[in-house]
Image 1: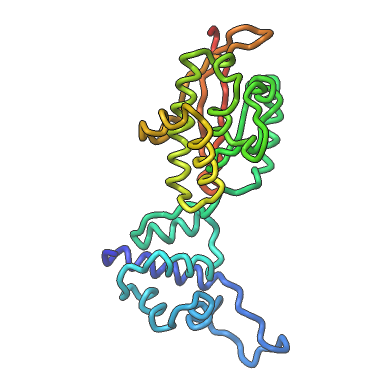
Image 2: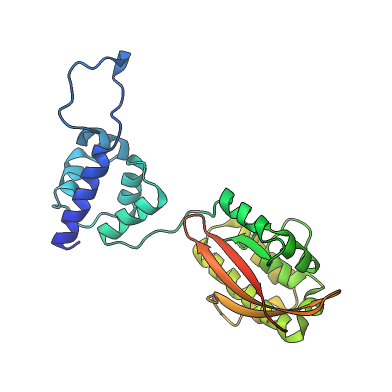
Length: 265
């Protein structure tokens, strides 16, 4: 860290430590009044599992750049939220870590928003493992042919290579593009969570049982598209076109896909 960065990092640690609630003494009676609010340095360092001498140097801007493990320990000891932890990492001059795994719970406000769009546009939410977490009524009706079964039934990448109705729904060119994107997004997911057994099992299962998956996997593509135009062959309404935008919630590693109907397909 540069000198100014060390100063800002130390100031952030001091402010967060001062905002912590001191532990209750045995019996609930304090022998003396504290002259400063929050935790003392030795109390915070004990919680973080680091020496008080090293923690003091961090606050004073006299320590070299702390490791990822030290920063994570400080974030836990200071009870930082996700954005607060990320700010701590940025002040320390290190890369901001992603979540260890996607959150299983969708924000309630997002679920309510999806419901209000039932008659306006399809909306889906999937996580960083590519598992479909929720879809509104419009999306359920549009994407019904892609519904899978078994352990990986809600995984978008697995659906792409195992569902028989993909070509009928998307057309030949649309189906090939969907397979390219699915393989690329699976590669990205494995890059974010390389030790995740669920993703490893999906990759192994598709490699062993899908005759076309190796062709797309060997392209080596990585998912990066956040906007797209898709066309669907609807059994009742004919050919439908949508502008698709993907919005990311990095704290939970959730992806929100908005399907805006196009004037004509």
